[in-house]
Amino acid sequence: MTEHGALRVRLDRLGREVAKFGAVGAVGTLVNFGVFNLVRHLTDLHVVRASVIATVVAIVFNYVGFRYFTYRDRDKGGRTKELTLFLLFSAVGLVIENGVLYAATYWFGWDGKLQANFFKFLGMGIATLFRFWSYRTWVFKALPAREAVAHAESFLEESDERPVARRAS
Image (cartoon, rainbow, N blue to C red; front, side, top):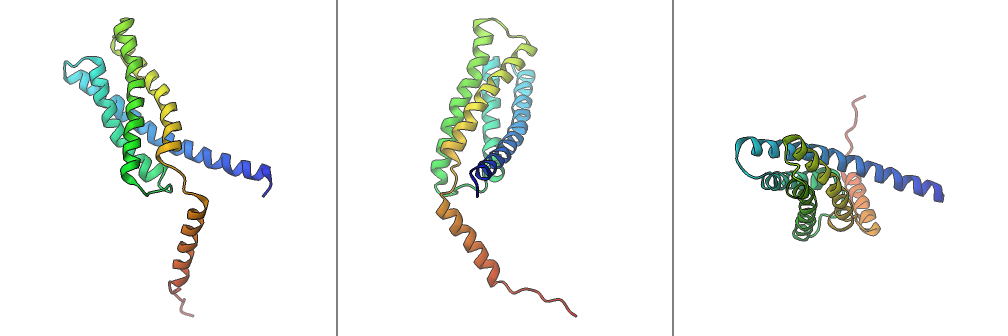
């Protein structure tokens, strides 16, 4: 394969990964905003506390989406380590997301409903960039090439062993 062809394959893979990450993230964003506004509407919790609750709910939703949709083809060994790293990087994202909201609300006094949603969204955007980088780099690692080839070969061997149904003539 040429250098140009290899680059195109890598960019295509990255594009699919970004699209899947974005799909899970978009639904996670709806979950986050839905819970945030529901908690604000139904309780007297302060804006940042409501946001932290919503972010935690979205983190749980996103883990399931990333593990079983976006990164389902990635290394599945060491789930405890994977979940620990996911929670660690998600906590950093939570601080980024809610730090922006905290600053807007308590430093600048921008605490209206529309303003709270805007700064929550801004914080989520900044945190999403960090999460994408950290999840793909540290949490959902790509399988090493040898393991990927061995996995593909074992799949082919299994399919060769299965009897092929013959059509009646």
